[in-house]
Figure 1 (cartoon, rainbow, N blue to C red):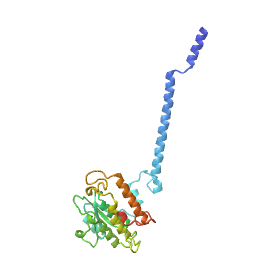
Figure 2 (figure 1 turned 180 degrees about the vertical axis):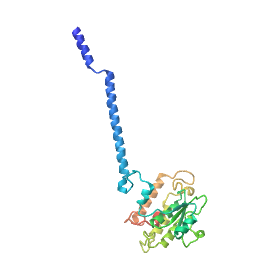
Figure 3 (figure 1 turned 180 degrees about the horizontal axis):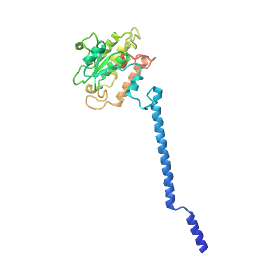
Figure 4 (figure 1 turned 30 degrees about the vertical axis):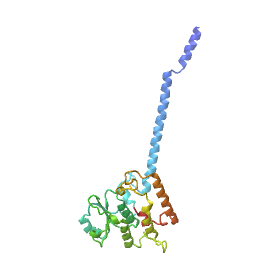
Length: 260
């Protein structure tokens, strides 16, 4: 019996205790957690370096995150001048920017008409200056003051498409043409401009066209998803009429693509 008892004690002593087993599992679990943490850190660094490959873009190697000066130096043209509320008179007299067209648009950046004209100026790659004004203080936005035009007769926000006509008339040879001669019988760009309002969801609240265009009806209810689906289908049909490109009138962007 003693021998048997001794053997039992010997077997028990050779088995790991439950506490020791738990400690071992905890250590192994901790090791796996640490490994996952290291892998996640490595993955984050890899993604960061892929997203911000500073040497490839000519940014300073001293800093992975590019500075505004680095971004500006990588542009193919200098940034256009942007002022808030008004143009400093001294600046105009010093560098001659009074000879450039002046685009007045809303500083809140929610006016669809302002964005239409802004996009048109950028598409033509026109050299101009911008003045950001509050629409609460100045209701005549957007407007463009041309060098040979007084501010009092500048086109206002009710005629954004008319400003596009002015831009094309003043820069007829600058690509892209806003009103291309696709057909001798049909003015496709102007025709699509006239068609688009009827294609969009009807009975939309005009007061919300800047903040939430075509999302709410005049009675306050939401525009149904089916209405948007119908609008998209009709726009696709318009695109199919000139199928040789991705835009409404073919391969080049026109005034029809910039309409509100």
